[in-house]
Length: 399
Image (cartoon, rainbow, N blue to C red; front, side, top):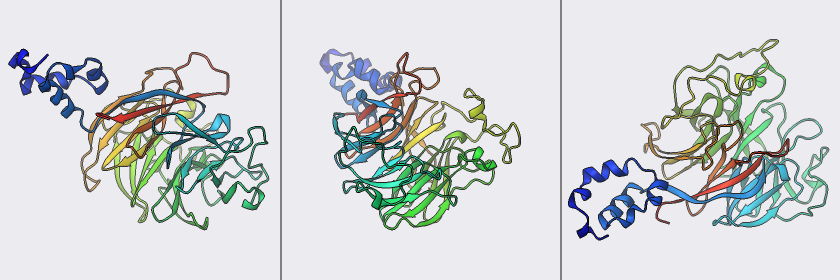
C-alpha cells in the first residue's frame, strides 16, 4: 500500500510512536510493518536502530556448554560434556572441531594466533589448570588429556603454556580475558573447604600471559559486598566487567588501578550471609534452595536475575541472565559512571520456567557485531548428568 492510500491520521508521529512502542523487533518483523507504507517503514527502521533480531536459533548439538568467545574465523565454544572445542562460522555453520578428548574444557579465550587459553580439569593435587593450546585437530579415539599427573608443557606437544591455580588464588576459573598488552585476567571462585570459599567468594587474578607470572588480584570479598559466585567477565581497555551472579549485579572495575568504578543492578537488601559459617551453614543460600528469595532479583530494565555473562563494545553492555532467561542491551554513559539506558531486552527463544531449562549462559560479540549466546536446550527429557545446550545468534536489525 502506498503512502497516498494510507489515511494521513495513520501517518502522524504521535500515532506511530504509540503503535511502535508496543512492539519488539520480532513482533514488528512478523507483522510486516514495513509493507504498510514508506512512512511506517522509515519509522520502524528508526525505532529498530541499534537493536537486534534473531538470525539463527538452536544451533549445535552441545553438552554443558557455558562459554563462547570470538575467534578470527567466527566463534569458538567449549563443549564441556563432549570434551572438545567447536568453532562456528559467522553464519552459524560448524567449521571445525579442536582439541578432541580435552579434559573438561571450561572458560576460554582466543589469542588470535591459532592458540587459546583454556581452563581445564584439576590435576592430581586438586588444582585447576590454565593451559594455552594449539587449536588443532586431535585423534577422537585417544585418551583424555591433559592427564591428572601432567605438570609441564613438555609433557604434551599440544600445550604451549601452563598456569596452575594454587593456594594463592581461588581455585575455580569462571572467566578468562586478555588485555591489549597481553595480561591474562582470570575470574576465580572458591570451592574448597575454608569458610570464605564455602560461600563461593570470587576475585579476579591478573597474570602476565607471556610468562605466566601472577601479578595481583582485585574484587576480593571480605564482607557481603564482595563478588559471590561470579560467572562471566569481559575486558575493554582499562575496564573489567564482571557478572556478580548471586549478588544480582554487574560490577565494573578499572583492572589496572583495582578501583570499583560502577555497580549496575538493584540495590535492595539481599539475604543474610554467613561469612564464617559453622556447622549446618556450609552452603550459600542458592545451594540450599534454588528457588531462593532475594529482593535484588529483578526483571526490571537495568536490573538482573542471576546475570551470567557479559560483553562490551562501543559503549553498549550486553548481559545474559541465567535466572532471568533474557539478554539485556544497555547503553552506558561516556564516562561509564553516569546513568544507564536499556536499549533492548531479548527474551530466551524458548521461554521456560523449569529449573535448568531455557536459561542463557555464555555471551560474545563476533567481528560482524553479531551477538552469540549459549543456552540450555528446551527438551523434555535428557540422560541424567547431561545438559543439552545450543547456540542462539542475533544480528543487528537491517543486516
